Length: 271
Image 1 (cartoon, rainbow, N blue to C red):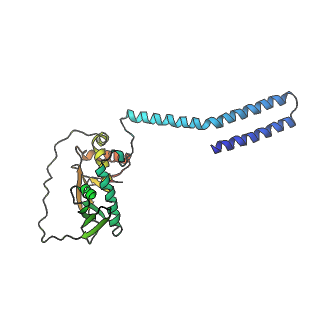
Image 2: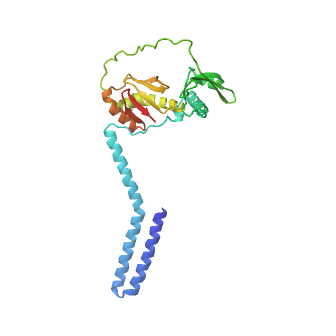
Image 3: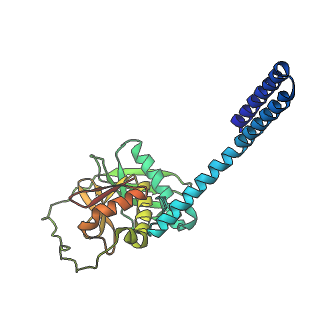
């Protein structure tokens, strides 16, 4: 707006100069025609200055509408990834996430690489009523657990713990290696919109509150995070696309605001 006013003021100065020059140098019938021509050109210039921003805005609006129609014709929904709106989130989930951020800040004040996982099945009840609950911590060499105490004054205290087993038993065998049943071809974009988005958005919100910044989508549909040297499953995705669709699924994730990379272990997603 200030730029338009500056151009208009400058054009008035030029107009006055041109009129003075014509009246001083030209006599006879030509003087009227030259004055009419100058005022006509100045009027067109003013109209152009005033209308140009609206013309540009209208052009951008037409381009957006054309792009939207093209995407709808291709069956693509244009929505960037967002942490779910607070208005649609369960109050218990919000309570846990707020407390997670406070616990994480407490841990990272001493251990900058720390992350944690609740050992309690219902941490929201502990947070609401107060008491002591246990978390498992990662990224801390000296300790592997901590007892978190929450009182009625909303104070938090962490007592770090190192649990050492009396004796070590043989490694656990994995019973989940059964070959999955054959599935119909899956469109990665449609699968993400109908099944993957809601699970990933809710999980990422929770993981982010506990200090994590990436996860891995495994071939069997498990969503895993790294906790120390272990990969721990957090959620499971139904009808997860087969490997042949992974590059396309990675593009879908990136178009929704996530960083995705296809690896030998699965699709690594970071935010």
